[in-house]
Length: 110
Image (cartoon, rainbow, N blue to C red):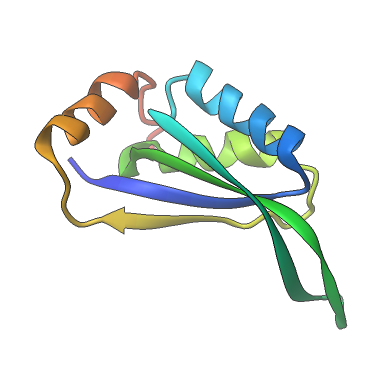
């Protein structure tokens, strides 16, 4: 089994919590962390933008990423949200087993 940490930036804490709740309720993630607001700077449509965002971290499995990505896109307010998957190369076996047990969704086959 391959495990992932999904990094997402959201408009605000309420949006991050809504995405986290949906991912957990649907069995697409085992855990969500919302560490707090960050100040982001980025280029958008040729302009330098700057402002607050909220980071959301989800622990999941790689086979669930396509469905998780679609759920985030469905709920996210941005036209092009940051949704990236980082591989977890190793981890405590009990913790990884807990991810397996908590992620109850079936892979989408994407």
